[in-house]
Length: 177
Image (cartoon, rainbow, N blue to C red; front, side, top):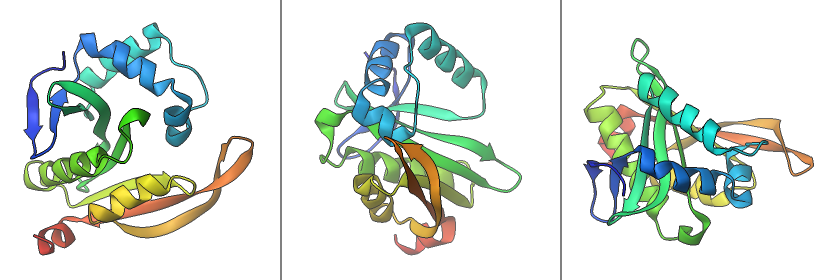
């Protein structure tokens, strides 16, 4: 069962990642559709997932489960938080069975509000592979603007692919309210 609610939206909650969630996380990050969308190239075993969990609990990043009621459907977080410059990177994934249900968009919108209102960050960035139209739509729905394309930056499934970089400023987000 996921940890306590950290952020609550109309459709989803963002909950803390607990030790008992590691099986869900390991299973899904090893799903071919998920690991490709993350740019991962190696399988993750139980020990590696535990190490990730322990490192995240000690670091300055934020990792949360995306939950529909009590059921985890994905993960979202902030990494590379730079309090001095006021920016961080958003990353997320949703289990393939829940794709197209709006979970990633709802979670991203919740996390963006937290980042700007509670953490006083000024800019959030995110990356999406060219082939991941769903992720690019999520970012655009959440208010992110495409800032550029890093051409043939990643090697996935036997070919070099472009990475689209997105950004969202706090003032842009507040203007949309």
